[in-house]
Length: 294
Ligand code: NCD
Image (cartoon, rainbow, N blue to C red; front, side, top):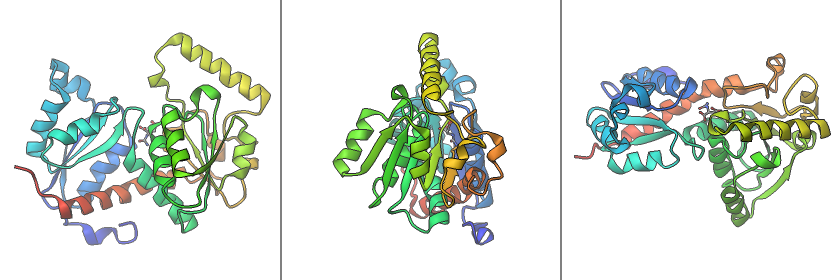
């Protein structure tokens, strides 16, 4: 798709993609919408379904998906419930693409993440992957670790404060697969060992309790005093090996200082751009298989 964008221009002629988003989005929604348009199709959309669709009148997710799937050929769903895509897929007549489900999954993001890794290293095996910051609530982390742990020889360095470490189920899953990993709260240690450094922002929208939020900030500050600042800055980027890459699903928070954007290791804008090509490919593949259920 990336090297031959124009040869697919009419493949999805007159197909309709519905983007049913209950949570904010810039990259996922726009790139899916641009993808279907580039393939010759069009979009119907709600960017704030909680407020602007009949869900605001109390309609269930199932009922709204049932209806949308009469109109559209594909549905992209983003919702704060972890099981939303499964629930939607159960009642939909057309494929449901998970555009982010709660804190649990963001599979198309993981595909564009691994595409970017593959572009840079020419392989998805035997890599040292550092994953930083909010590993507990970040759905992009869950999906990426799931995916990369299926390729042989990959080693993980999970770097965060104890309260935001990887969920126990994911750790158990890694142990069962026999994947090598190390947990640390020392940014310097993890960065210097990583060929891929994957940063995330603090998923503050899932930490509603003010007391809990304050406690987390204190824990982060304590950790920073003991080790170093928990962010990529002109100082900490020096710990990254020369031929490593820095990824982030975006949007970024203070964890990546814009002053490192021009460093050749900073690949997050290319990574975001790859979202278009990967999502075009997903739609193209699905279209070849897609038979709308009666
Ligand atoms: C992510 C998401 O929504 O989970 N954004 C994205 O899709 N690129 C990451 C985030 O919000 O932190």
